[in-house]
Image (cartoon, rainbow, N blue to C red; front, side, top):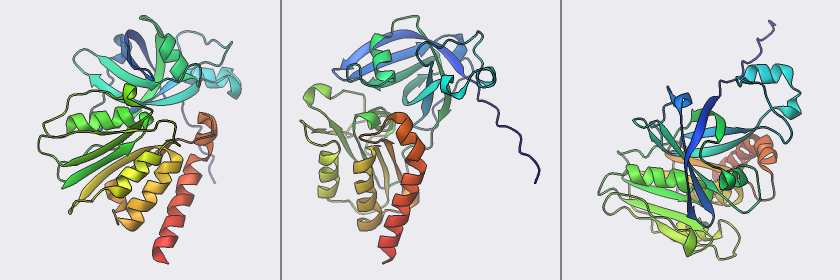
Amino acid sequence: MAEQPARKAPRATEAHVVRTERLTPHMVRIVLGGPGLDGFDAGAFTDHYVKLLFAPEGVSYPEPFDMEGIREAFPREQWPTTRTYTVRAWDADLHELTLDFVVHGDEGLAGPWAARARVGDTVRFLGPGGGYAPDPAADWHLLAGDESALPAIAAALERMPAGTRVHAFVEVEDAADEQEFATATGVEVTWLHRSGRPVGETVVEAVRALDFPAGDVHAFVHGEAGFVKELRRLLRMERQVPRERLSISGYWRLGKTDEGWRAIKRDWNERVEREQEHQQAA
């Protein structure tokens, strides 16, 4: 068998912070700009995402920043750490990229960075990726998630044309974490307040209690993996939503670091899918 060539490291985009805004007690908005965004493009999907690159503490890289060179010159434990964030908005005319960050004090890596970010700070990222946008041909849409899914849900809601039938459920801690965003007439979001309850519990209850409209549904369900698993079972098995009409994934997992979750995410999702297919066939 011929030896496979080594995968080339992806090219990183460099941008600078041009504005910051505290949207709610637990969400910070960072707007990025700069000439490094020339050639960047996002817009086909409402769940576009980028992977931010953070150097481990005490590590610095030579300029110009080069992922291929870093992987050749530095041990793996000194490679940049990645954190994935949804593109909240991309303004192609102004070359401005908007990202929203969930912030819980000093918890995590990207959240504290966003809370401390100042105009002029440099950030590098990979991407964009993505795969979902609301299908205008669907009879109705279901959107459900926690704070981590809010940027993608908001982007999807803003793309819905007037008159579109939408049931959107977003769980946040309390009313102070609700947001306002522009949507077409008749398109609204139902805010669910966790108020100390286990994450995702109110989302599962709301979707389970929903009187499902007739017709073709296009669904987007993302957030903590535990409740996403429950909703996957509900939608695929009980409601018989076809797999191709469902964008569903655990963005994070309670009790797991980001690295820990990414290490098992693919196998975990595949195992859940097999279990549910087996139950459905039984």
